[in-house]
Image (cartoon, rainbow, N blue to C red; front, side, top):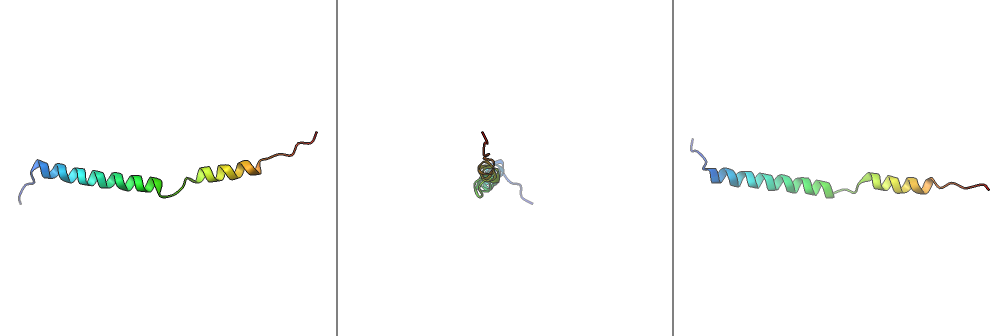
Length: 52
């Protein structure tokens, strides 16, 4: 079995690292955060009527 030179290992590592980073970044931006949506809805419902 032939050995891979260190440059090929470096290229392979960089290729998989860039693919992994691209996967992580796209998953981070693909859906909106749910906490912000539920927080804005709860603030509207928590308004109180004051009886003076």
